[in-house]
Length: 526
Image 1 (cartoon, rainbow, N blue to C red):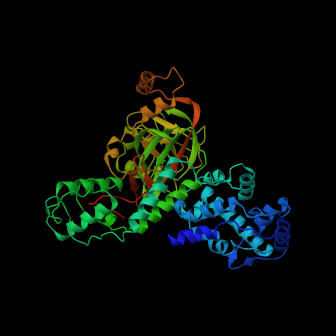
Image 2: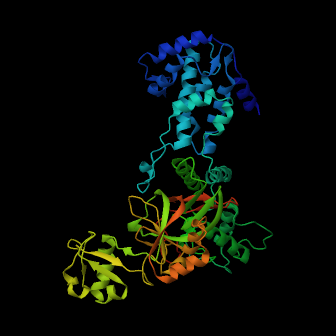
């Protein structure tokens, strides 16, 4: 309480040197060759860019002392940790040291520090601290080029500076929910490290072992277990099994209610690591556009799920299949503009050589039975070749001039419909004949494109506004076997993002280790 009162006194505005004197001191500092001051590295280029149009007039004080907006900024910087940022990165210590400054020179330094802090903070909280490709090689979405100097001018000119500060972080519901999750997990961390389960056999219903008591405490710490009256802490009862299943659901593990190798490994991840995961995914939200669209598709690669979002509300979701670990799906954004019913599949060369060629060598009828045609090359006038005339044993990855094209039909890898959003990787959303793969917890089976669980439901949603495309008409078109491209009434944004932590609308927090890491207790868990 005393510390809070002392800080309040410290932050009260105080009269000091005149604005004219501070302006003169600012001009002297910014026209000099200063590069460092009091251990705080400042962005002198941007500071000059900001102050010169103002004729070096201070931004944070007037003839009566420090302005109220200076206090608002200091409070915002102090709370930077709530946004997953490091508050000490914004000169808080030297700002507080010079808050009660009286001389023109010290007030000028305070002004420079606060301006530099705003420029840094606004850039970090709006567009991220790091360039995405430094963190994630699969990220291929352009980050907005923020101009913090222009933003500061705009904020100072606005009638409500506090509102301008509140508007800096992303407004996406997913970001706000992660911010709440960060606060919650930091509160958990104040209770100390959670229980670590020692190596040992699988824990399951009916077991009586000392590690079961540790398991109870661990699940209680994160809220998966709501502790009621317990006769025997070391007994694995049905309530504990339900808690294990909730934990497994949140971590993308097989919901078998048993603690095997992978579940044990996930339980033993420290709370500090989970906090960093949340912070990292808040950073990913900052890399995304400020406006995602009134309606859009969000493909959560880490959660193997597609969400249809309209006016910030998720209308429906469906399971998806993504790229194999060695053919990972890139993180891209685009505008979905049209769909194709009963599409042809133009087989990518790598898939043709690595996946299909070995099958044709083993079975000379493989291409024929799968409706795959062979063409001499990839040109528009390429000649179709007879499959039986080609010596497939003599064909290799280095010598494969052919183009493979699969006709529409029950074996077509695109299924009944594909959804196209132009991008440089040639990935898109599509149906699949391999429906059984959706039952797997870890769904990394494609060559990079996104296979979706309910293509006709998505088609019906996207074609709203075209009266002729009723659900019945869509069914008839897919059943006809006729290839038909249909433009959407309006383009719909699509985002493919590798989320490794997110919070649901009910505040449940989900974690994943990585998009292409399995989570099966009897297989692999990374």
